[in-house]
Image (cartoon, rainbow, N blue to C red; front, side, top):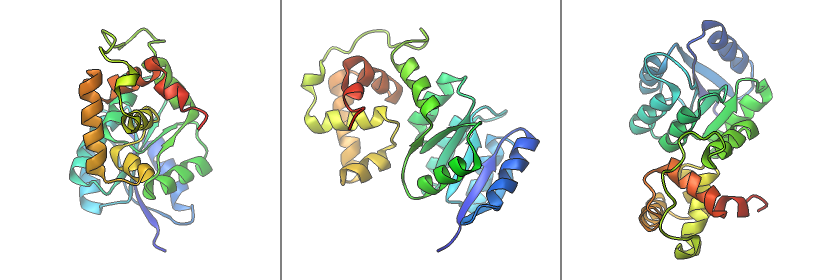
Amino acid sequence: MNDIRVVVADDQAAVREALAAMLDLMPGIAVVGAAADGVEAVALVREQRPDVLLTDLRMPNLDGAGATERVLADAPDTAVVLLTTFDDEESILRGLQAGARGYLTKNAGRAEIAAAITAAAAGQSVLDPQVQQRLLTSATGGSGAGRAPSTPAVTPADLTPRETEVLRLIADGLANRDIAARLFVSESTVKTHINNLFAKAQLRDRAHAVRYAFDSGIAASGQGD
């Protein structure tokens, strides 16, 4: 089995070098590049075509969320795992919208980081519990910032069971490809469901959808599944 090829991006040289050195010692993982910001990360991904980009959220020139958007547009087979101090809800939500496959806090241990990289390379999503709580707080308006301006006109009952299921998975932080794999359908089918539920619930983007899922109880109802 081939090693999982990883590009690491962090604007702090000490952190970047430590991550690269640590991951290179992990069996089954090979670091093929290290970038000091999002622009360098995108260029390295284009050049190396790694399996995973492990990137900080807060970086100069281009942050992790912006790098995620560019990477997935240019190299859709590269999974993105974001590292965050979870102090920037807007960037975390942008990363979710952009399709990042995993979120970790910077206090994650090497085993957790390696496990997240392995899961992301296998098409699975990884969401650190602290990041999930931060997203939940933001989605339900606990911070008072970025709350949806109004409640959608429809109720959850107007959504089909499959649309409700897709919405719950969006709230869990899954990208379209992960939802497709979970439901055993094509990615285009998932996009159709998303377009339909967005139209019915008058949702403008994935961040709004996450907020609606928690406000309506759809996400909460799936917590124990």
